[in-house]
Image (cartoon, rainbow, N blue to C red):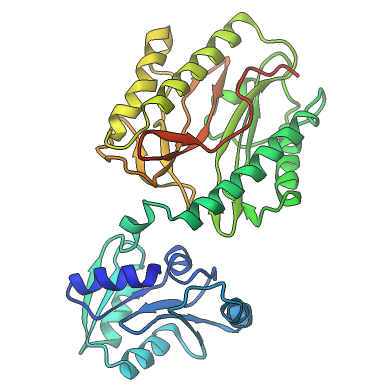
Length: 359
């Protein structure tokens, strides 16, 4: 249970309990998503304090055994700080830890005003070290999210045709993910073609797809709170020799990056395996972002595959591998898979084809 792991850490920091207010930490600790409330972790329980919009839904899940055993559900009937003060008093808590990275200045000040006799300990990223390594259940949810994403890609190949716009492609991908069982989307869907494809995070527009050019689609589903992330680049029409050369370079760079992803290596080493190949093929400076990132309840988490990353990877890390080449005035190509670091290397969680597709 994640709450018990955090409680042990809190004890090592010299506190008796921890309070978390942000949506991601609340879901990680309680197994339930809400946009308001807080979680109080102490010796006895992980108290999920939520208002009437969420109370019945959480109670149903608790009764069905779908939330961790240590989770207790409380109805928020007054201000957050007032309710927290009541629980702290009832539980006789004299020292309280909070995540200094995930509270506003005003909330931090409010805590100090409300609890003058409680020792407050602000620590950054309280749950971060635990969230880096995914549990079997988390990996199950991420796999399910990726299966939804793979299915959406299969669907979109039959939708792409002359006259379709970038915005229509993005909307169709999102519809397909919903239809396949997604709870929502991991991030804003990217679908950019022609000159727009040189924008790594371009926004889909009403522009009609450019024929005989790159169409890059970056999209992901959310399943039980967990994200998937995949990019595929296709060509509507015929690929030129330069398009084929760029695509082949990105595909080989990704293969090298996946091959390098294993326990014990650093983010810099994995990033370099892909980046050095792209540079060697005459595209130095055309791959501006890092090779990959972890993901889970958030689309961008630590650790990272980056030229500035000294992260050392361990089994249970879930990572993206997403090299790209972007040439203003021409277009861009990115190929992205998710991989799971294992004891001996990594497993590719993405099943969609990666050979160059002409439609």
